[in-house]
Image (cartoon, rainbow, N blue to C red; front, side, top):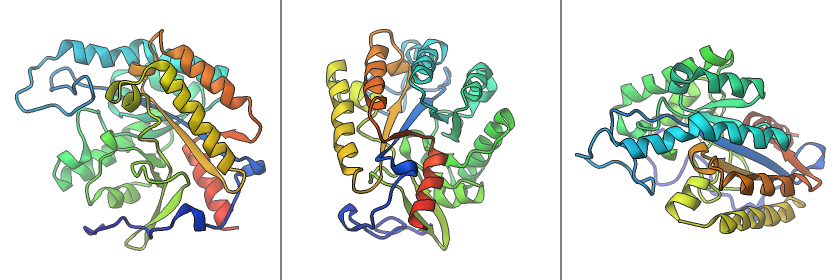
Length: 295
């Protein structure tokens, strides 16, 4: 994609779009995305509010690293239990080094029939922090590794830190990705035109995100639960007219703690108690959207 002032898609306000519906007349597609991430102990770590490491930061940053490792040792298993109990198949945004260093997590995701999408090799490294040739290789190796571990090549991508370069969309299309979740600017999917080739943006939450809400914005758990409920109520009402996506981003090292996981369980139980809620994976949302708008 060439540098430009606006994205590779036309501006289209949500109020002027042709109405369409999810399968079986559902109002809302609930998309739950656990970010399963790995950080390396021998490189600088993000800070307490998820700010990027600074040059000269000390290594090893044991407490910051171990805080995140908790998510893979303990937190993810609580998240899996909650989602299984509520009948929700998740889409795991997976750092591909998890496949190499923690294959038990990948095996558990597959046993739950979760979708796996690319999320970089490690959250210590972002695609816009490397030269173009290295970015191309990073994306290809990430998707190759997940395909080898799972038996299926990912069709979706969420960049580490939601970051891209001018080359990222081209690299994703070249490697078989059909959708991307970095562009947090809508409540419905929409197509992108990348020099005549298509990839679809699926709504991902920058706000309804446990890392952003609890670590960056320092919300309390009651405030986060109210945020989930308010988001649902607005999107559910709007979904009577045309389909909406309610995406919920989870980080096991955040939401997976004993004092936080009950909030997630309560909120999802309440959401799933409503008619017209379709708990779906990203690929299912993509296919349903394309079928609806092309009907």
